[in-house]
Each structure stands twice: as C-alpha cells, then as structure tokens.
Amino acid sequence: MTDERPPAVLSLRSATLAFGQRTLWSGLDLDVAPGEFLAVLGPNGTGKTSLLRVILGQQRLTGGSISLMGHEVHDGSREIGYIPQQKPLDPGSPLRARDLVGFGLDGHRWGLPLTNPGNRARVDAAIAAVGATAYANTPVATLSGGEQQRVRVGQSIVGDPKLLLCDEPLLSLDMAHQRGVSELINEQRTRLNTAVVFVTHDVNPILGMVDRVLYLAGGQFRIGTPDEVLRSEVLTEMYGTPVDVIRSRGRIVVVGAPEHGLTHHVEPRAPHGPISPAGGAL
Image (tube, rainbow, N blue to C red; front, side):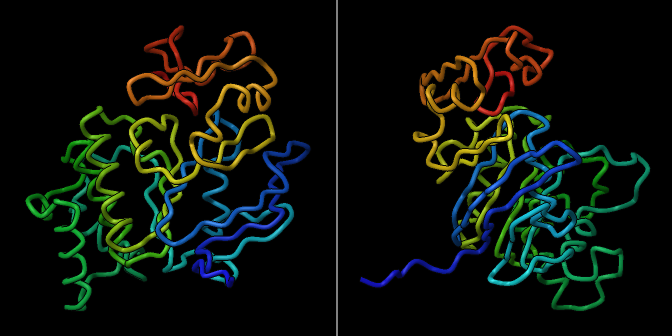
C-alpha cells in the first residue's frame, strides 16, 4: 500500500534549542499535518514560546532542521498566521479593528494603507468570519478582551494561512470568552484546513479539539494523543516526581507535589489548588 497522507505543513527533524549551557529540548522529530490541532503544553521556561519563534523564523535552532511546506522557514512567511499573547494597547491609540486585521496581509502588517479593493474585501470577509463586523471601525483599545482576541483571530486568518500559531490566546479571558475564542479558532481550522499549533497553560478549553499534544518538561518532550501523553506514569517520568492525572467530568487535572517544582505553574488565585496539564490553576 502507498502512503496517501498529505505532505506535512510543518516538519522538524532532530531539532534542538539551547541557550548557553541550558538545553530546552533536543532530538525533536515532529510533523504537523494539514488541519491538525496540536496543543503545546508544559511549565514556564520549557521553550513553548521559543518553539513558536523558531517556526516564525525569529529564532534559529541550535541543531537539526525545520521546514514549512517543504521549504526553509523565514521571518514574515505568508503561510503562517499568528495570534500573540494578549497585551494591553495604548488607550489613546486610534487603531481600529479593521486596521489590525489588515496588518495580517503581506506588507500591510507594517502599517501601509489598504488601498487595494481586493484587500479591503478580504479584510471585510475575515472580520465577518470572526463575528466582529459590528465593531470593525471601533478603536481596538476600547474593545473587551474577548472582542480584541476575535479581532486578532481575524488578523491571523485574513491571509488564508496554512499554519496558525497561537501563543496562549486564552490568557486573561473569562471562561465564556475562552470557549468562544477556542471555538472560533477551531471553526477556521475546519473551514480552511489550517494546521494549528496552540500553546496553552490549560488544555481543558480546547481538549475536545486537540488531535495531539506536545508536552515539554525538564528538557524532555512527549508527543501523542491527549490520552497517550496526559497520564500519571508519563508525567511522573518527565518531572522525575510523582504526578497524578485525574479525569473528572470531561476535564483533566494534573496534581503534583509543590516541593518538587510544580508550584511555579499555579496562579496566585489558587496557590494550593490543582493545576492543569500545563500548569495553570483550575
């Protein structure tokens, strides 16, 4: 039988990333298929955001190779959509929602005006796709956190990317907006057959969407389905200390001993509570 799987959108081979004497991960072999949803989990400082920077062409690997659509990666690739971590905007900024979406088109990310009628139509279509038409001409800084994230999703998909990178896009959002933004990203993945690499501290809002997990911890990694990776014996081996994985009502909770280094994942609002698979407090 012949292998009829489509070519990978993203491929890493023996990929290694180190800063000085500290190796974040090494020997990483990974293929991300069109339409696949890959969640990247792990504690702070294990190289999750650095992995996205490598894919974006902003950070060079220490060893190994990476390719996008079979070609060498480079900064500013039109094949990639990117949702960065949410940052507050200057309250006095006149930047409108449609302006921010327009930056997602080649060249216009640098602030050039949208003079091409075709580009304006694409921006309007992206705004409509994320349900932001009602506030398309509103300054982004005045929008709620959930509305801003909708606009950022529009910015990331306006160029019909082959790969969508999401760097903790649910951070600082309430549960309703987490669900809305997650579903929106998943809808665009389904509509465009876009591969998604989704960095998060809590896998639960996206658990039903995830095909595979890349878990980074202690200089190691594991790749597999959530059921294969998010298991007590797997995480215990990675952390080098007993870790319990509890499944309850469709949610996954990871409980680890605070004295063995898991406390830095826990949010201040629940310093002694359970942590999510990537460390965020539940």
